[in-house]
Amino acid sequence: MHILTALLIGLLFGIGLIVGGMSDPAKVLGFLDLAGNWDPSLAFVMGGAILVSAPAFWFAAKRECALLGAPMRLPTATRIDRRLVLGSLAFGAGWGLAGYCPGPALASLATGGTKPLVFTIAMVAGMAIFELVEWARASRIARSA
Image 1 (cartoon, rainbow, N blue to C red):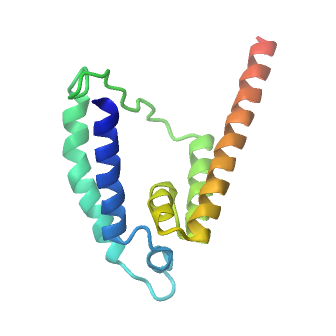
Image 2: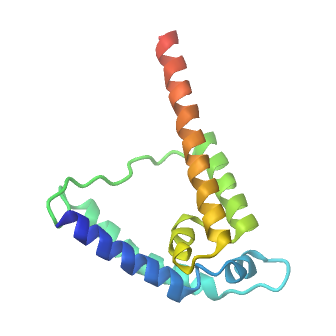
Image 3: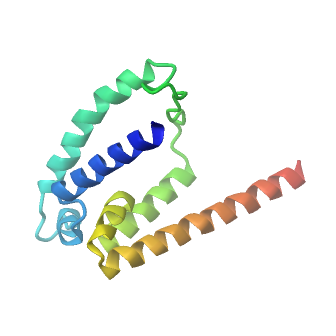
C-alpha cells in the first residue's frame, strides 16, 4: 500500500510540475532572468505550492506517525551553516544553467528528450560524488577520534 501511495503522489506531483510549467527550461530561465525579460508566472506556482504545503507541514508536525502508519520524519535542522549555503548556491547555479531542478528533470524524462536525460545523469553523478565525499569525511573524523 505504501508503494502504491508513493507512486500516486509522485505522479500527481510530476503532473503538477508539468502543468505548472516547471518542467519547461525556457520558462524557468525566464523566471530566473530578473535583469532581462522576467517571466513572473512561476512565482504564482511557487506561491500556490507554499499555500498548499504550509498547512500540511503544520498538520504533520503535530503527528507521531504518517496517515498510513509510518513514523513521521520531518527535518529538524534549523541552523544556516556553510554547507547549507554552498549547497544552495550549487543547486541554484545548476538550476540557472540548465533550467531544471530534480523534480522537473525527472518529470521531463517522460518526453524522451536528451537534455533532461543528460541533466539527470549529471544530477545522479553529483549525488554519488557527494556521498563519496561524505563517506570520506566521516571516515576521517572517525579515525581522528
